[in-house]
Image 1 (cartoon, rainbow, N blue to C red):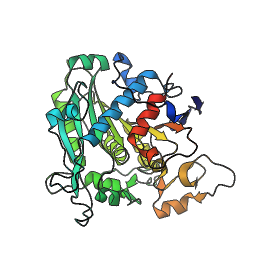
Image 2 (image 1 turned 135 degrees about the vertical axis):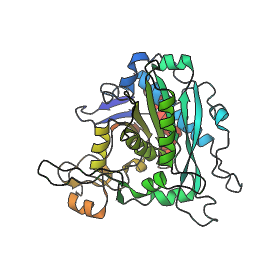
Image 3 (image 1 turned 30 degrees about the horizontal axis):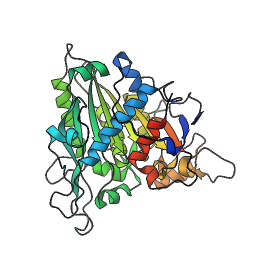
Length: 382
């Protein structure tokens, strides 16, 4: 396995790890390494400086562990389109992790999460509101000691219904209604934070039998912070892990949680772990998220086209390069003003761990699969 590190000066620098896919195999057991006081660094307190190239062994174990939580969100989803229970969670919350294949996590699911998508004809999509993930709290004293804090996991699956596909293709940017206007030193109003319209709709639209995903998350986070707050309690962290669409929802969740005014003197550290996530918002959204203290680590497969959409990433030279790849000679550039007018000016959020299989003919579909991502991470060794 060869490693090609890039400059680490930028918070958005890319770390490329080239791997032979034949080497990839998932770890059979979750990490049992003692983390202790190292946990803030692993959660991104220093933007993962020095941990990505080569990939730190403990961080590797944590990425795999959070990836398994995402896998459990998929495993607990009812895929039977002909059943009345289609789109619901197959398991009760008390036994969800056990029955989804994670018997000894030290976490307990406290809430199932649902998202409402654009209604579609019944013959295409039997439901417009479905189970999207869950929230779980670490309540095992031994695991709390190992982790160095009480961790809260929010896990999101990727797209599974036709209605979610419809929303995901609404790729123009929309303004955040909760954003506060700001003015520059010259007295001019700054650009507004904007996010992909379809992702925002899935995050904020209420369903017939539930509130919006945004409200569900905030309500449960408030409850958990209140229940486990206090000086005598261990420190807390919130880790939001997602794949594909779930990765986009994870970024939006970090933004919403960190922008809240918490009464607690020591609000929890909030981190998103994104597997194969698409772009979510514009450069102003990225800056606001960074200013709020939220952390995002994006795990990207170079062969995964989903990580290159939607829109165009805006470069510092007022031009945009389709696909977002490093500038090359004779590559077409699109002026920033034109992309902005089209509503397609996006910005990659957080730090990126870019993995690349050495397969000569990569499978575009398989490259986006969560299992592929976890195998690539598992193949990264010190």
